Length: 111
Image 1 (cartoon, rainbow, N blue to C red):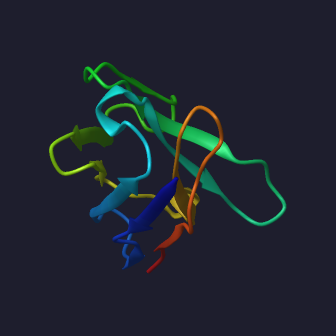
Image 2: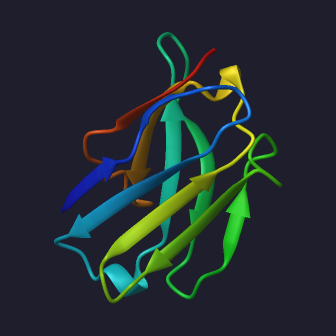
């Protein structure tokens, strides 16, 4: 299984970013995918998940600001993040339910 997250960067509070995750080595269309984030010294936090059929669920901190989506034809999962806050600063990973994850992408929200 290979998962590669991209799209992170430095953004000002209130700004937006779109993260992408490319997957291979799995039956992607049938695999629930999740976005997680982690900051140094803290546990990894689930941000959002999406089933193969498109059902979504969000952490409370992400509801109303973030949107998870997927394109099964392209083996891609996305996380649109709006109204970003400094506390959203973290390394973001895409991950399967079995724990497969690749290199994350750094998101820094700062003025």
